[in-house]
Length: 252
Ligand code: G
Ligand code: G
Ligand code: MN
Ligand code: NA
Image (cartoon, rainbow, N blue to C red; front, side, top):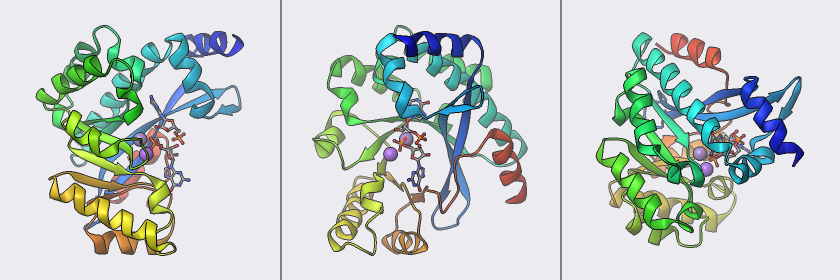
């Protein structure tokens, strides 16, 4: 597979980068966390994650790649916290990464090395990750949670059994999928479903994050619904580390 060889080379050549998308507290508009998103620049050609994450997962290269992202992002976020305020870090996990040997130890090491407190790290998982090796996946994630790391369900509402997921895995946060948020104010059913998810999350004591906010009307409705946090192009686009640097300096 050509892509597999390219990925291997890209890892050795440091062709990967991390962008961070700010997440704001909807009540205060303050940046409360950043989500790390992997970027691959092969020379001047940008290859979107959706085009290589599958191959990275299939070849197992996702494991060293994710380990690099974890350590790098923990280090950068710890530095931002030292120079401004206590933002959190969200990381997207891959199924293979969770069941790889030493996953829990790797996370513990990244936290120890960077000085980032466990409570500042949120690991995002999607329901599909519980399809195979569910027991092992749940036990690893529960172990991390008992160390103080937070867990989030990403793309909430789109899975086959989103509500069952809430029983299987103790989580701290749900991230409402953009397919709901996109219809806010334009589609009555999607607006009602969003409101219902926000209420469900709050009734369960969870932090509720709305993703994919692109229009002011969505932001207004989410605030009115009492949604905890927001993320999307209207709030802030994913940006390189220096962008977060200056954003946090100007928002101080
Ligand atoms: O940010 P963007 O649209 O490029 O992300 C596309 C997809 O790639 C999203 O589903 C996102 O969760 C996933 N993704 C982005 N960064 C990472 C990462 O570091 N690890 C994993 N496993 N998935 C990621
Ligand atoms: O699956 P996950 O939620 O991790 O995906 C994050 C992806 O969503 C990233 O690729 C990011 O670039 C993208 N994204 C973030 N905000 C918006 C938005 O407002 N609109 C759209 N279309 N994509 C967004
Ligand atoms: Mn995510
Ligand atoms: Na999502």
